[in-house]
Length: 317
Ligand code: 5AD
Ligand code: SF4
Image (cartoon, rainbow, N blue to C red; front, side):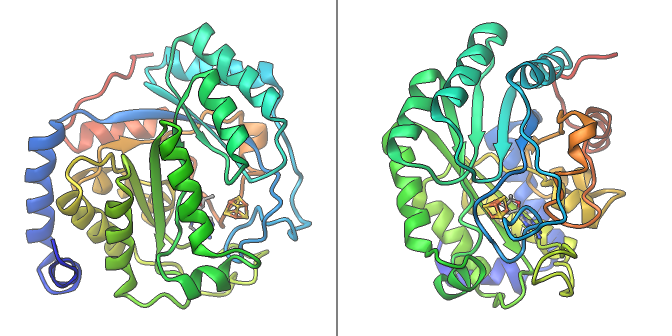
């Protein structure tokens, strides 16, 4: 599909028509099943300084934590018992001891026999390779915005090309890769959203998330307005049409700007993945990427899936 057609779906067609088309594609490609990924935010330490994110290293108003291996195992055990089909280990981008993380991955694979996805930022190829060897199968590394100038403005000292190069390295190592981007970033031109979708398609991602930007009060962008839930939903629906094969999550950011129906609406707009958090609650409040972050839990996920008339593997409890 050409850029003009994507722009037409994004900004000219009625929302309902785009959602209906996305729902048909979803039904054909993925059926009714919703994947539930158990998210464990194991560290909020970060060496980067992204201008939108509360975990940026210059934010001194944050108690930094890293979970111990036993805490990660306990959270993952709970997630799997409740029906999560994958564990997603997420953190800021910090100098993780590669061997430590490899050991955690190995224990998760051995102990729980569950696929492990990593979302830990950019690292040397050797670390990616070690974690792959230890059993990680997927890696999420969002490109955040396909506009190279905006990317540089938001990520001091970094360029989009190195992000794309990292995704390529991960892909060559045999990971399934996931990307994603924000909707409504300060300085984002709307047409860039078409380029975001085109970039994800060109990369051949298995998963792509699009969530609204949400201000965080301790960041340089703290006074800007949040992106719109409606636009994020539309972007999801267009992604479903353009990349039928992709796994598309209803993001936590969407569940934050639309606390009532974000998750369910995301599933109705072409989404087929939810990522409830299993981070121990004592730490979860310190993972404040943006303000008023909604904690998506298993009960919320179940309600959203059932509300959207879809199926899941979650246990009753
Ligand atoms: N609003 C929405 N999403 C954000 N992220 C970071 N900061 C924000 C924000 N202010 C998302 C980014 C990043 C992940 C850590 O969270 O997409 O990849
Ligand atoms: Fe760190 Fe990721 Fe936040 Fe950037 S977006 S500051 S890399 S946690």
